[in-house]
Amino acid sequence: MYVERRLGLPAHGYRLLLVAAAVGSLAGARVAPWTAARLGTGRSLVVSVAVSALGCLAVAAVARWPLVPLMPAVDSAGAVLWNVCTVSLRQRLAPSGMLGRITGGHASPRGGL
Image 1 (cartoon, rainbow, N blue to C red):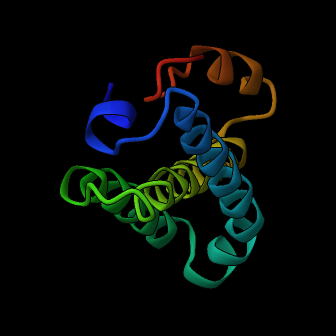
Image 2 (tube, rainbow, N blue to C red):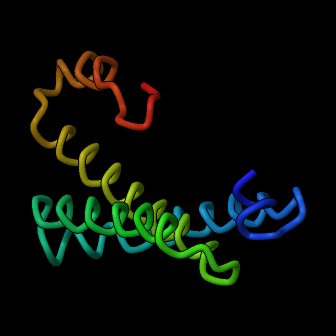
């Protein structure tokens, strides 16, 4: 409804937002090792939350069609950076015999396991 009514795009315009999010996820995965190495895990987590929040807030504030697809890309890049950093941190901190249990017990903030 947002894509059709607010942005004025046809129903298949939603696909563009999904593709943009996928591209953002790939970009986030690409820069995550570099970001974590340069900033450290803690600062990378702060950056990931800020980037993801910026993407979400911008969608609410900017309702112009050419800019909106950038926002899911930014949000997804931040989410992937978060995931890479937290999983890497968990793997470093967990005792080797407990990693499977710790990973199995972790609930993702995005709703999955």
